[in-house]
Image (tube, rainbow, N blue to C red; front, side, top):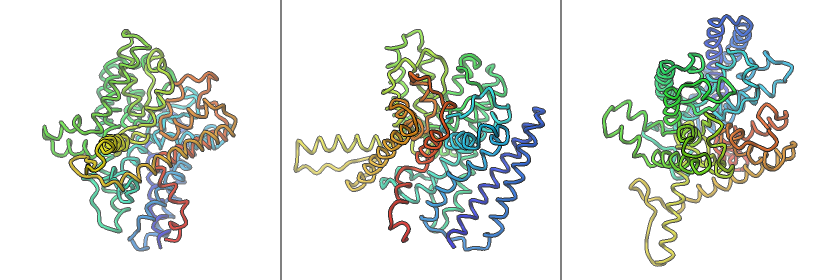
Length: 479
């Protein structure tokens, strides 16, 4: 019975992708792009039929599900849904193969921002489609974190718990709809305000729309390959900076601010420990960049610093973060953003907890008999809870190293393999151009095998490393 419930909800997801394609078909019609109207329309019809078959044949099954069902659904969703999302790329560029389209769709849905195509070669409809996919992926990332990952409690310390997480046992899938509506509403509101302000600030309307969708999702894909400073005015850039900042923040905190509308909750946007760390990282990266790029580049440094710590990674100006040593950028990329956000990486809260444990252990070493528990948010964190964090770091390091080996075996040198492994696993695709590889490597230059490995790393980074490692344990399959 469990597999039928998983198929049912996968069918619902396929239908949702079909609806998104139908909406994109209308965009193509407005732009008088009849070829893309046909491509998006035919694909939408095909996916809607497939999704409906899944739903109709499994709708009478019991509605109860276990945490194991939710985990399998999570993994199948991230792996299979990009297949449907990639079809328009394949139909438009069949000579480039399906895998390139799948790589780009995975990158968009996981909000990584690594484009397998040169964006100027894409029809405007596909440029909008990948921005729409990034927004959809951002909503899914936050929703799954609030519901599925919180229920699985894979971190052991409850880093995914929030006031939004309220459900009874066996109601995981049905709760996805309610939480998804809340998250989609919050992000849609921010994206809409961002679009209006960017357009009023002088940004081209189409570019403002695409950047608003990818900004709130910290996606990183842009409607043009050139630097933002060449076509986005400064005011519009600052608006995009705020959108990326909100995308990297804890969505439950943002929801409380919008829902309660009180000064106390507004202050939480700044006083939240993860948000304060984000701000500190942005300021620190800006100041560090001044040493390499000079005070005259303060504005582009500040803008790109916010883009980078949010894992959006938009490139605003060539003389900014690109001047900073690659090892610094890679380290910040690995840290990531807030736990309940669209940002990638290890997540700030895990880093904070480990530093708190380090400070406590140092204090204990000077007073061995002293009882000194780790306190976080006025609650005691038991020592055994940190085991899961260390396991997560071990798993993350293991996958990161394996990614370097796989990419090296696929033909890349060590430097490029390291950068692409970090960029894919931490879901920050713009890290590659920011590190200025000596080989001049760009995402469209990757071979099909290299794209396949990178896609796998993106997906693993989004489903949380431990969720993948759980599948390798015999006890999970016995259960």
